[in-house]
Length: 159
Image (cartoon, rainbow, N blue to C red; front, side):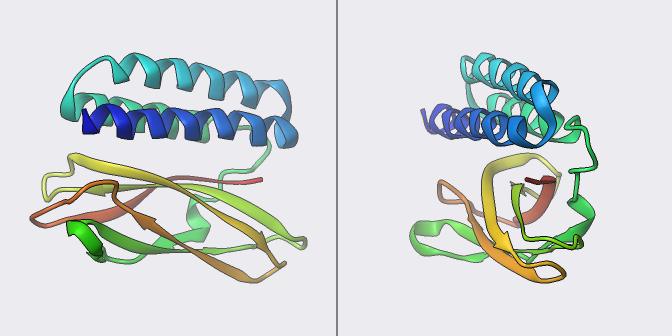
């Protein structure tokens, strides 16, 4: 059940991406996000790890295919996860705005075990970062995670 709730949150993130991307790069981005949302919804019908991995892949694919030079994964760093309340983990996400105007960012952070398997995913936004400036957000797992957990930036777009 938790995997389905997490997947549902990812589907909402893809849908939101479709709305924000449509503003920046037209109907192609909206169509890509819509297709990714469909794939994530299909993944939600499966159980456990495979559903989460499928939803994460759908979101990353949608973000990666957005046209217009909006892919800014290189401008994002994420800290090692630290303990948060309820056994959850969180990481600080830092983005640098390399443009000459104020921008916002949508970033997908995955939490992975030592084998690289996706344990959880949290899409975060960093809004209104000034030109040449930096902004931060906190990515937090949606459930308790144990063992060795690594945080990874799977995708990032500038909106």
